[in-house]
Each structure stands twice: as C-alpha cells, then as structure tokens.
Image (cartoon, rainbow, N blue to C red; front, side):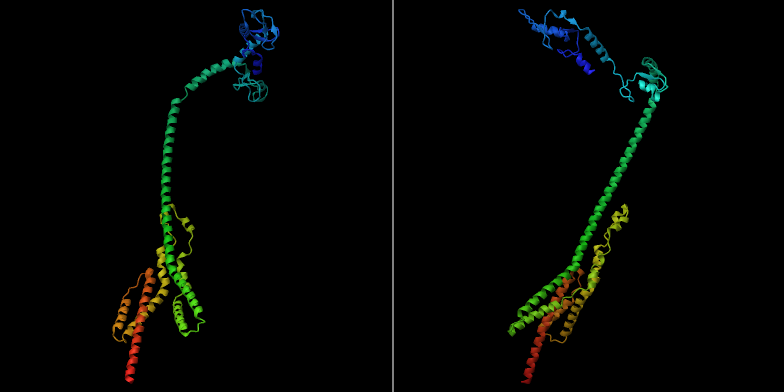
Length: 404
C-alpha cells in the first residue's frame, strides 16, 4: 500500500492526485497545482511558456482547461481511497498470511481457507461472514443480557469479605512479625550483655592470673639479676692480691649469694595448681542451651572460683616463710630472757612485741606483709648482734679486771 501511494502522489503538493491532468509529456499533476504555477508566472506584458515541473519540457500554453483529464489515474485514486478506509483484514494465526474470511458455525470461530479444508475444522459447517454476522448479532444480545444479569452484588459481597479477611490476616502477620522482632532484639540485647559480662570475667581472670604469677616471676627475675651482679663482682675481684680489698669484695659476694640462695623456687605442683582452673573449656558446650536460657550463660570458670583455688596452691610456699618468721620471733623471745635489761634489750623487746602483734593479711597483701616482717626481723637480728657484742666486750673487760 505504501508503494502504491507513492505512485498516486502529486510531485507538486505531495498529496494524492485530485482531478489529475496529463501534460503532453505524459506527466500528471493536480489541476489546482498547475493553476497555481500558472498564476505565479502570469504577467500582463509577457507570458512565458509553461515547463513541466518534472522533466522541464515546454508546453504550449492554452489554459489548464485544455489539458486532458487522466481518467485512469483518477479511478485508481478513488479505488485506493475506498480501500484505505476499509478495516484491515485479520490474518490467520495458524497459516501465516491467510485472511480470516470464513466463519466456522460449529466452533463459532473465524478461519481461513486452509483451516476449512485441513486441520481441526475439517468436516465442520461453514457460512459466509454476512450470515454469521446476523446470527452472532442475535447471540450477542442474549449474551449481553446474561452478563448484565450476572451475580454482581453477591460477588461484591464476597470480594469485600475476602478483602476484610486479607486485611485481618496481614494485621495478624504484622503483629506477629513485630513480636518476633522484639523477641530477637531482647535476645540479642541479652546476648550482648552476657558477652560483655563474660568477657569482663575473663579480664578479671587475666588480672588474677597476673597477680598469681607476676610476684613469683618478678622474684625469680630479681634473683637472676642478683646472680648476674654476683658473678660480675666475683669476676672483678677473683684476681685481686690486696687482702683488704679482697675481703671487702668477698663480703659483698657472700651477701649476694645469701640473697640468691634465700629465693624460694616454685615447684611444678605450684605451677600446675595455678593452671588448674584454666583447662577443658569449649564454647560448643553452649550450643545445647535454649534461647530462653541465654541469661544463664556463664564462663566455664569464674574469677572468684579461680582466686579461691589460689591460696591452697600458694599455702606451702607462704607457710614456709611464715614458719621462719615465727621461729625468728620465738628465738628473739628466748634470747631476751637471758640478756640484761638495758635500753638496747628493751628496744629489741619492743620490736619483737610489735612484730608478734601483727595480724595475718589477705592473700593479695601477703607478699608486702612478708617483706615488712622480714625487714623487722633483720632489724631485730641486728640489735641482737649489737647486744651480744656488747655483752662479749663486758665479759672480756670483767675477765681482764679479774685477772689483773
């Protein structure tokens, strides 16, 4: 149709021919288009020859009315206009390109010629489109009344019921979803709280471990440092030949050696006891707990339990030191009974009484307390040594006076 329309279009106005006139050169144009060209070229003094707009061939000007009407072209244009306003023929979906020009009265469907002779419609009753139109027009009125009288009110009522049930169901689901969200937020909050609590217990446990092992570690490190200093002193005076210097250095060396030998070493049992509360733990043990029991989660070993296990492990080590202090105090009391009652003896007695009156501290303060007791015991021993020296000097003087 588009190709045909190009052949039926005037070259001047680019529209379908309207009252086409043919020139001597066989080119056709609309009458109005040719009149417009002639009116534009009209001059009162001189009228130029008319040229064909297509081939530019000159034509004798005798007026448009003298040109021959192209009847064949006008008839083709009129038929084309009638065809163009007609509805487009539908094509068969089964047989491509075939128009639907037959009505199957058996199946009440439009079919093509191939469908009527072959396929599913073979042997059916057919009729022309005009006859089928009259029949279907009557059937349409009946079907329209059926559709119009369908149960619309009942369907609307059922639709409203379904929409109300849907709305209630969605509200219930949303309410349950909010409850689930609130429940899991509570569980997550509880888990986070228990996580912080258990990790805090672990931090406390770390401090307890450091308080347990650090004093021993520091004491052993100090002993090693004293050993290195003693070795340095020994190396420095080993080759000395001066007796006085050698004896002075030897005195310092013995003091260092006494400190080293007086450092108690922890046994393997003590170390094992310190690690006793840190064994056999796996977080998979919590997998068996229910969600409602999340708040019952706890660390496999609480720091207080671990601390409670420390004093028995440290008791043998501390008890030895305590027994030494007690023995020193008892020896001081015994010595005071045989010494004269002068000022020096009274000072010693006061220190011993003060030392014996001290109460036992808590396990965390035992190291500092033992250090204080040891210093007091050293001071008492120094006073006793001084007192003994004075007694010996008095004894020597008395003996000398007696012999003289």
